[in-house]
Image (cartoon, rainbow, N blue to C red; front, top):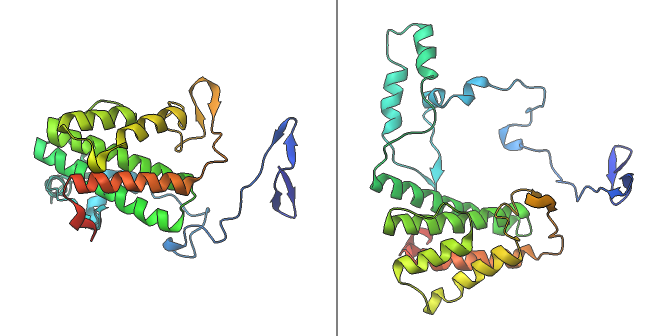
Length: 249
């Protein structure tokens, strides 16, 4: 890549035998939602790396526009911020927990998978309207489909295959429910063919540019909007199957 007046010039070789290019300009200052004064010189706030310190601010992740119902963090808050503790004791308690919990029941796990699935759909829906030709949009859509299959499988059988292969998951889903035909026709066929002939057996295809066996992303002629269309159609079918159409009205 050659730099002229501070700009990268596309397609000009920088290293012998290799051509690099900057695909385009973002066209705006990054991360303005945090304020125009945000700078690379600002200090990273280390307390933000501790799950326990986040309870001080009364915030929560939103899943499809609403917080996931979880009472465990309220009890943790009482444990961590108990009155009468010394600074050393408070620090010790902060370091004694992380952002995970154990021993969730079936109902709690099912609700959590459902909320994750709906949120991925929600963000994919936004991205298809703003960035329909982005690899990041396709990745979110693919992730939404994978989470959807796993949610529906867990809801029905309380387990799912430990795989990211959409073909395997789609056929497990149809088998578990005895479903198929009608509006679900070709869903599994598309997933099988997509994973084999587009991803090349690499489920991280749109997540990373490099894969096993020294293979690299070569999808520079892909119509990503077309892929997003098919992903959206599969998601609509799964939403309808789970009787959740009204959630997105």
